Image (cartoon, rainbow, N blue to C red; front, side):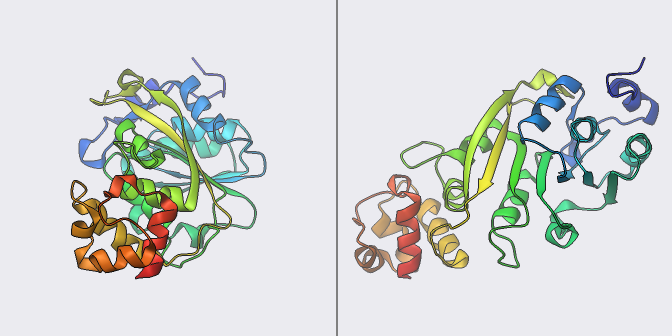
Length: 277
């Protein structure tokens, strides 16, 4: 029985290729093609767009992205067992799917980016999702605006809340500061555990991030040092937690009350601190 895109149902694909999800690779497969379409649609129009995908697995999201008109999908997959299933999708969409076998954490996505618009859409493996996001927010080559025009990514809901958090939110921390400094982000919708095979123990969420064209001027390394110190001892007053980077003198220089705590500072205030180092 074929599906709307003319390819076999994902359960059949998984069974035929023996693709049981591997915990060590952080795999949880999405089999509901209506849901993968919803994720892909939340990235906005895909006509003429090259999409990077990480950890496509059996290709449920890949199929959705291609069926919605993406010019091309470049997918990075560590699990060689998935390559034959992805090759079948490539045959169905000739010349539009390139699969790179490798580790996404070691992949230079900007070097692979072609001319024209690029979006990243992925159901990220749980064990590398946060690090991948940081790599895209703080590229080694320092390029900003980045090579991508949006990120539409699935995380554990707890991580999603940390990405979009503002000051005075329980989930606010280094990730919220870095994401808030460089992007405008929001949570799109939650995905319940039963949508996955195997079901994880937690709810997932889709987060959409758009890069700020002109983020507040700041050296990445300095912002990282300040946020690391501040949130490393988040229950303490900043005069104490920021001792390793200048303590009270730094706070006075930046015009910030030394008695405040890290979670009360806005992104703009963290940038001020970093610029005062």
